[in-house]
Length: 402
Image (cartoon, rainbow, N blue to C red; front, side):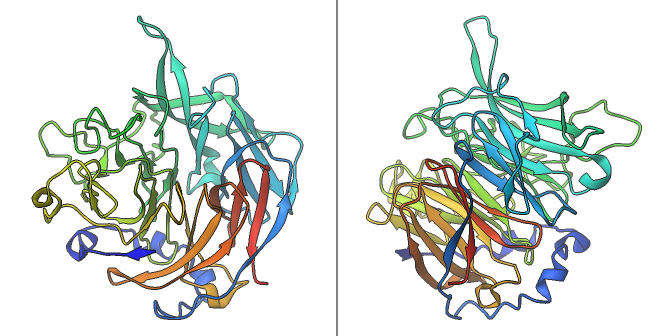
């Protein structure tokens, strides 16, 4: 595997975080002391938890619920795993609203930081919206509410944002609340190959971007679906969409925040030559479609050398895999020597790797497992333990020590 990182400390320094939320994992940090980026990464293995989920694509947790995780089934259901057992009744079933198949479906879930009180959570799914010329595929970001029975109220949907999709693939899918309390949305470039519409480098479209919106709950008023954070980088740029946080992405299928440092890691799926891991900074341009990974794609060497194009922290080629699956930095307590390791994998090869990153460069990096799993996502529970999802076999596996 190749490693490459460019310095972008000035971008990182301009990113603002809430100090209180940035320390949201203080309890874990006490038992997870990061040994530094040159420390050895320990061996891991997988323990099967559940084996009968239908095409799982994401796993996450709700604040204040240490004994359960929520799993997305691509066709439109959210399932609950409580005490390592899959509950029969779905938490939410919106299969009738979801356009499923290929890279489409119910793709993302994020619970509001104040979910225990508000009961609000957010989903990302693809749908068909009636149009004069036929059904238009859209990415839909919606808010739902928890009902009095503890399950989601399917009738409570409030659509925050709809984004038209020109093709059926590269829909991104991940949504997550950052340590600053804002909702981040990963959007692919719209699909097909080579980004034929030039969306990645076009600030007038939301495709090929990392978006950041304020989905906060306003007391006594629900007039607007969301607000634009005042510190978004392109809020004053003429012709640019103010929701954009970073751009030049191809298909950021899975991303996550390090709950200790606040860094935003993205696995951006490549096209023909390279897969990449990026650390996303405010206003950053990650190169697609001028570059694929750290290679020139549809650009001259001079264009590739432009200072504003931020390079991945790590890339790998087709000998190692075909579709990167971004993961999480381990901050749990069960494996102290794994602390601070970013775990990621590849859908096609079943490989799982770990790396340690700080100060704009990767230190230790190694392959941890070579499995036969079709890895669709990693997940994190409330106490920082990590999981791997096998899409084809419908399995949920916990990452554990041998």
